[in-house]
Structure formats: C-alpha cells, structure tokens
Image (cartoon, rainbow, N blue to C red):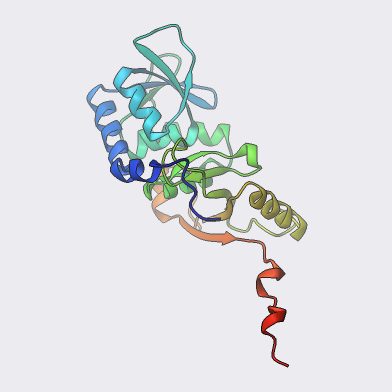
Length: 241
C-alpha cells in the first residue's frame, strides 16, 4: 500500500533517529543495569527507570502499565519480545516467581508450553526486528503482527503479517483452509491500507527442543495483493480503430 507518514516532518524525524540506533541504546542501558524481568504466565513484567522507559517507548518494546510510582514504569512484554531481548540482544535476564533465573533452554521450553506455535512466531518476529521493522500485535486486524517502518507515532504500519509453518497454508489443515479465507484477509488488509505479508517458517526437519534450532530455520516471504481488473483495462480513448 506504500509508505504513509503521519504529518509533516515525520520522515525527517525518523531518518534523524534510526530504529537501529535506538535499539542499540536500549540494549546498552539494559545490559549496564543488569536488567531482570519477571515471568508471568504468557508475558514478562519489567520495572524500568526513567531513561529505560523512554528508550522502551521509542524502540516500541512492551506495553506500559499504569503505575503510581513516578520514577519507575512497569512494562509488559509479549513472549516474542521478551525472548528477543533475552536471547538475541542478551540484555534482559528473566526470572520466575521464586526469583530463579531461567536459562535460554528453560525459557524456550516454557514459552513453547504456553504457545505451541512459539518457535515459528518467534522466528518471524526475530526476522522482522533484525531488519529494523517495528513489530506490534496484529489481532485487531485479524493477523499475527503488523510491521512499521519506524515508530507508530510517525508512520502508519505497512504490512499485516501472517505467520505460517511448513505445510500450513491453503489446505484443509491450515488457517487459510480455502481461497475465500485468503480473499477475506486480503480485503481486510486493503480496507486498512496494509499489504498482506505471509511468512512461512520452515524448520527443515529440526526439532524445536532448544533455541539453537533457530539457526536451521528458514523463512519464505510473500506479499499478497488483490488483483484489480480496472488496473489492466484499456482506455477507450486510446483504442485503435
């Protein structure tokens, strides 16, 4: 659907403050403070100081939670966000309710137990974040994620993202079981000015018993748009006689 900035000067602001730079600043701040998050069901809670709260908001990680504390701000991370900060950026330790730190393998197995599709969803999330896309939940649009070129305050999201695993898709077992499912999704994306991005994650035969399997995973990226016959019709005024 194309890039749509929000207001005059938004593009210049984004170019002057690239997302890659913001994430590096966040990584440095969390590492220096020996940041520690609390595992809570299907999310991770983290109490950030003023500087970290600003960086988390700018980098679009987590959801701020209303708190009466003025010098501290609680954030709630989704599982993909938390694992990305912990495993990929290595800047967030995660502990359970008994204050015991979870290693990467334990954290991986726990998140898989909470969400069977976690390995595929995390690989898709990681793939987009490593390319400096801002990734946010997409349930309000009927998809898994939405992807922004920069902060949502500056630009509209460009892609509505569906995550499929190998063998899933337009078949009797997948979410897009019939073509009408696909067409409905494409129409919905079009109505909110987003391009449908389908990420198919292939495990290549590797069992997802630990995060080390991620190195063997591959992703096939497809953008899907609805064909409009009007775009291909001849202009009556230019027809040859």
